[in-house]
Image 1 (tube, helix red, strand yellow):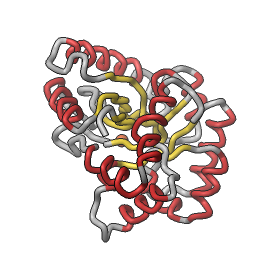
Image 2 (spheres, rainbow, N blue to C red):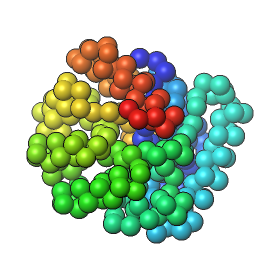
Image 3 (cartoon, rainbow, N blue to C red):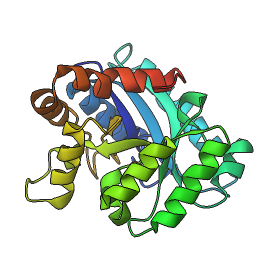
Image 4 (cartoon, helix red, strand yellow):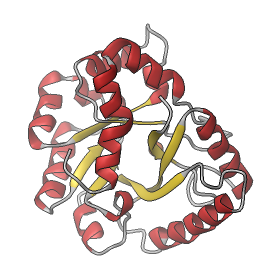
Length: 241
Ligand SMILES: [Fe+2]
């Protein structure tokens, strides 16, 4: 269980609605360590068209990395930069212009939509990204109404879209529709990545261990190993999963 990857969180200080300052970021990273996480992809929100956002995020990311190297966390954590991109029509152009961070500078990109977004739009955005040579990951797929339709979900799989779910949904209440659905998809081995989607210590502090243990117990060690380690490791090396 230890040595896990958090593929989705908002822990760069002061750049989005995540961690508000360096102290909060370090506290959240300390908690990540306690949760068995050693590799963290910082995926701040970004919308195509925000010209200076990516540069500011990179600057603050380096401030965070430096602070980690001078703290008790030194040598315990590996940090990577990415973005959680709001999926609008111009996303591929903005990526091509270098205005958005891909995951660790490779071809993988984490993309989110409004919960009520139409399938037609979601599919168009993913088609555009794939045609542009990117490897898109749908962020927290449990949020989108239209993906609860099996036909739509299968169509995205067919396209080659990867799926991420939030750890909090895996360990949610059994009566929650999202939790039951996500657990079913995990048992079918259709999810590629887990993320805490932590926004710091004030909103959704990072939790990984319980979700990882649920997967190990209910989905088998082989799949847990792929989900928690091998898939993210390969994605961050820019290798095809
Ligand atoms: Fe997020």
